[in-house]
Image (cartoon, rainbow, N blue to C red; front, side, top):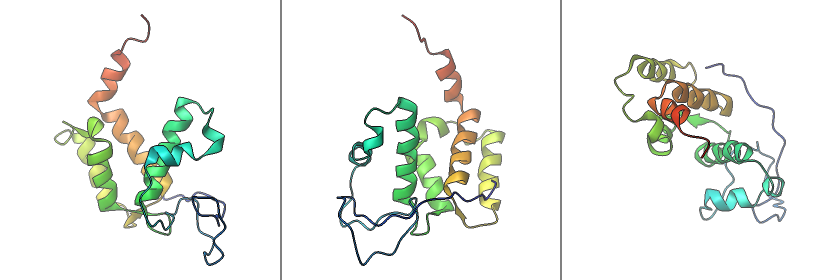
Length: 147
């Protein structure tokens, strides 16, 4: 994991779009303080720029929203939370991989990561690494794409 940080712009609006004068600017990756949980699909729908977005743009945005909703106020994800997301949100890619050396190496690398937390870039690298080592990827490559 590279440990790089992403540049982000400050954000000072509630999800409803009203300014929050008492809020200090935070990273766009940091979770917003919400009284109630808003579904990912509703969060995705609230992003005007993605109304005509591609499937790939929506997929990356969904990943970013899941990361943001799970991360701490500094936009960092605890290692345990990252592992939990792999098991709950990425289970079709991780199922059956537990005994495979490449997957074990990825989890060992995560455990040995010098920081106790992952930034968004590290999390994306983890997801991509799990994806390319997964059996599911072979099934995806073999899927028919024409009638």
